[in-house]
Length: 221
Image 1 (cartoon, rainbow, N blue to C red):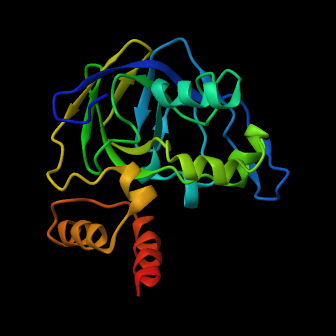
Image 2 (cartoon, rainbow, N blue to C red):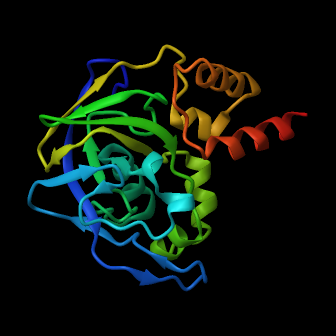
């Protein structure tokens, strides 16, 4: 897989919420139960039309409108867990092939289909709701340690999307920090690089980075 500008991939499935459920962990309702749709659907500011975001503060909003996960990473987990990982099981909106999701550069843009343009924003952080859905021992710890986390994206230009659409990676920022690198091994230098680019107006960071930056800097001091 490749995250360089011009790299191409394919949308294998577009998924949206099948139903809203109440979590057993007491965190309210969740739309993590996502399943593929057959028809072309619109993608707007808050994501795939007809989808829901049960927790926009932590797993939603414009900066986390779409969650993409690669088939390559899903195949890893299928071998690791000895079970199928069908599209939507991880709560992803897009199941992709041939293009980096965990290895996508923060701020990189993807052109999907004829009109849709998405921008890579941040890594997926596993939570208790995800663990509840998977039913695997120590799931949050295992998912974190492996680091195959996929990426969130914001919508730059709205458009329709369906399985089979091509994904073209465009305009990869030169800083080279991927969502996977930031999630698994972020450094103080990474924090300063991203913050400086954001301050200069060259990079739009998700609001979630404020708490990430604070934690990384505190840990290093």
